Length: 84
Image 1 (cartoon, rainbow, N blue to C red):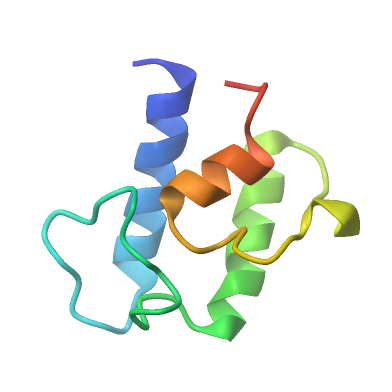
Image 2 (tube, rainbow, N blue to C red):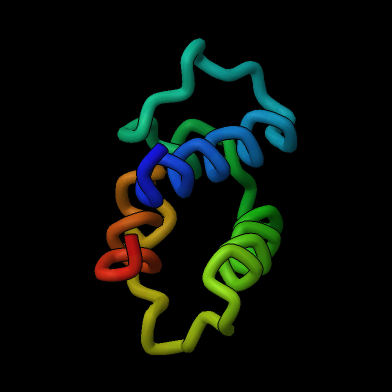
C-alpha cells in the first residue's frame, strides 16, 4: 500500500471509529466532515494530534487554513502533501 493510501485509510478509520454520527458507507475522501457533523470542532483538535503522530512532528499554526479539515482530501493536501 502506498504512503498516501495508508494515510487516507488511517484518517478514514480514525474518523469512523470516533464520529458520533451515523456515517455514509463507505466514508469517501470528499465527504464534508464538519459540515455534515461527522467531526465536531472539539474532535478537530484530536485530528491535529493524530496528524502530528502520523507525521512525527507538530502542526504549525501557519499550516492551519480555512477548509483544512473540510474532508480527507483537504487534510491530506494540507498536512501530507510532499510527504507521501
